[in-house]
Amino acid sequence: MPLLACLPAPAEAAGAATLPGLSLQPCRLKGVEVGARCGVLKRPLDPSKPDGVQIDLHVAVLPAVARNPKPDPVFFLAGGPGQSAIELAGTVQRITARLLNRRDIVLVDQRGTGDSAPLRCDDQAPTRSLRDSADPAQEAALLVRCRERLQKLPYGDLRQFTTPIAMADLEAVRKALGYGQINLMGGSYGTRAGLDYLRQFPQQVRRLVLDGVAPPDMVLPLSFSTDAQAALDALFGDCERNAACHAQYPALRSQWQQILASLPREVTLPQPMTGREEKVTLTRDMLTGVVRLPLYAPWLAAGLPLAVQEASEGRFAGLVGLGLGAAGGGRGLGIASGMHFSVVCAEDVPRMPLGTDKPGADFGDGQARMYQRACTDWPRGELPPAFYEIHPSTAPVLLLSGAFDPVTPPRHAARVAKALGPQAVHVVVPNSGHGVMAQGCMRDVVYRFINQDDAAKALADAPKDAGCTRLLPRPPALLPLQQAPATSPAASGAAS
Image 1 (cartoon, rainbow, N blue to C red):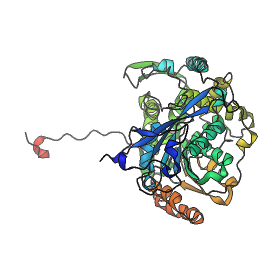
Image 2 (cartoon, one colour; image 1 turned 90 degrees about the vertical axis):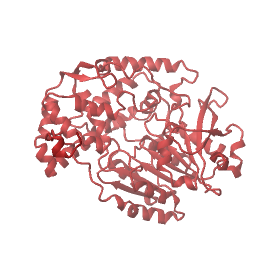
Image 3 (cartoon, one colour; image 1 turned 180 degrees about the vertical axis):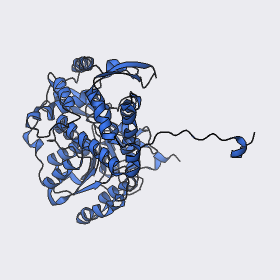
Image 4 (cartoon, rainbow, N blue to C red; image 1 turned 45 degrees about the horizontal axis):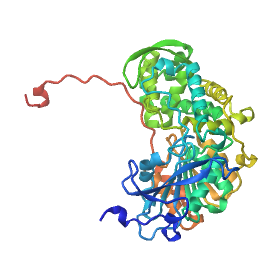
């Protein structure tokens, strides 16, 4: 008998699969080992015009394996802004494997992402030359053309893609599926979305897990520089304190400063998809932009000392290659750029004059200037003043941070945890970067937090359970390849 036939429909007792407006049908999701159920919910593009233009909100449910599942599902909120939750289904299934035994996992492509009124900018081919990609004027022109194209779509009112509107969509999905209280898991931008769902619909939240906290008031274009600088300084400091790393790279920090002082300069680099070498004028903004990306993952950041040393000797391929590799090697990170800018231009950029973060000494204000230019003519949605306020939570909230996260470091989560009050607990995972709930034992920490029936015990146990990470090391710095001594077949015992 096919496995799918043995799986109950989500919230079947509540008649979820037959409710008007959201009929779920069997489907298969990329990277997912179990059968799913998918459907489309119609939602008004403009909430103030319920009878106006409608958009299709795509929903996927991984049904709980148990015959008698728990009534409270787990909704996963993707990051970006601009990632599709459904496209991450394989990763989500691996993270939530234990939860899936007793609870449905619900994935909703937020408006502007995936197939839900997508706002994708498809103008940048993976084989595009590095020279063109490094030209700020060309990048700005591409974004303008993308915006103009998106605005011609039937759902092209870019003011209607803010986080509060998207969370109202999520609540409509909850109702259509017949669920009562739900659990939410959000990563990166998904934490902002989760906090806003908690603000708007506090009584519907049973548990909330926030991984890499990006609160609504963080002013993203400014914090980029501050937090990336802190992560890079920490990398250099760790290398100086580690005997093996310091012996191999004794002048790492000064080499980095020498590289920055030499910019702009013309360098030769291979295009990541074609391998064709190109001459490119490397600027400070371009270099710091690609260096920031491997800092997201310590196993990638482990290659930075070697790459910096090589760049100080005029070989930049490794340094730039690390950044391009972290960005998908020219294939991108699956971000719907139009949705990304619709969110950031409405929610972050207008608050830049209020921001208090100072630009990092090395990273400067290049990111902030880029967003300011991009958002000059980008339509901005309206936000309720309460969007930026975080009040005490009535539901238990687990906040997770990587100690070396270059974009959502612990300082943001600590502030949010304080505002959420006694129902929030903050766990910092040592020697980790951006996103920690998928790491080893942290999957079990998240599982126990959600699965525990006693809310007070769930909050008390989470920090103790996370003690499993206390010995987690930072990946050692990558060493240059040493040529192995030649050996003869006779000496090695190999057959001739």
